Image 1 (tube, rainbow, N blue to C red):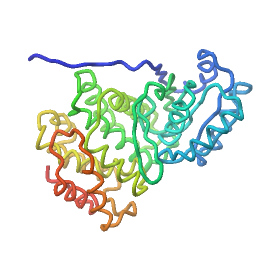
Image 2: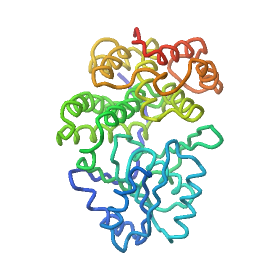
Image 3: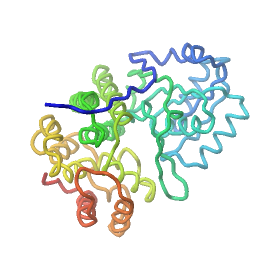
Image 4: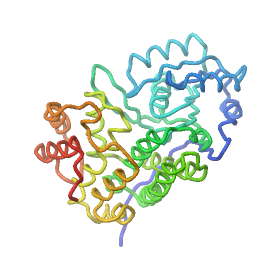
Length: 353
């Protein structure tokens, strides 16, 4: 079989292993920096303060205001704090919200970033930034937003609540599953995607059964890294478009939205690319969309958009927004099909494909 593809390696350093977050000071120094602004959400302010304490004189201060969907107004406040502190780099501790803030700051300042993930978001190894302004979420790709260093420490995920672990893991899996049929897919990314899905398929049930299972936590973080690498290497399609619409225009929570939508978007596309999505069916059993739904149900994930506060009246507008601008997808984007998909997801109905 003749193959034709383009693969671009992203120039970031990944440091993986238990306890590796303790190396933050070393990496600040290696980047030639000396005044790190530590970033977190309000919920993780205590952890951010502890990290700043360990950094000692390398810590320029803390900004604990990161928020979901990276609102521009929050970034503006953080930028003012960074300038006031004389920061020359950022250390983002937390999940996708904190990572997004670090990226937004890097876009505006071109200062280096170190990310210490505590969830399975995966965005820390991409050059993608999603920002929200005026109720609309937009995304961009820019080399400036790719973090220079990522410190993956499975020990930091041992206390991640089971529910958050499940939704965060399913969110990561969405990057891998959609990467399998990306327009610009390549063999390296597809191998990573399949390996990531297998790792998370094994790890998440083990975490549900025993939340402090160190091996399962390491496997999940490994899978999340691979999922994020896929996201950063190939383009996404229908699934990510719909999730950005729901998150940006209806303020649904990011990871939960991805978790709920994943079986339905994969079921929509499998008719067009059954061969490319065959690994999903092999890993999760049966048809890809139904297999993903069954897996999510088995680990106690949310299954219905109505549980996120979305009303049935919102579905028509969501369908309009999701089909408003032309974008590539392996199956043609038809409003009727998208509206039906959203209805199934709203009700939590098991996909047929």
